Length: 81
Figure (cartoon, rainbow, N blue to C red):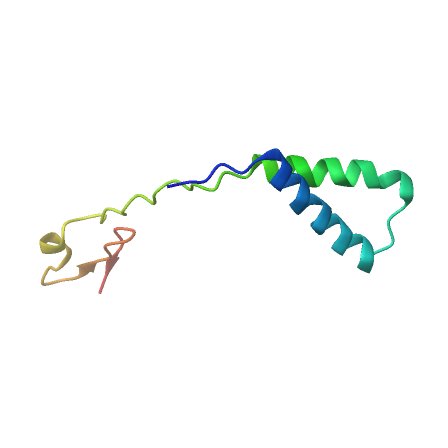
């Protein structure tokens, strides 16, 4: 369940982030609008939902990974003695 964040909330977060940055760093006055815009666009572009991770599949089946002469790595399929 993802929440939609309003532009007003993003603007509030933007001002807090920029204020914190400016309080600890020297930023020219003419760069402030650009910095505000960049932070706002970055926050607006963040999507709260991330893609579900795909479960990795073994390179070979577990039964086939063990042989009398070697074992096969399930991650990359390399034969090991």
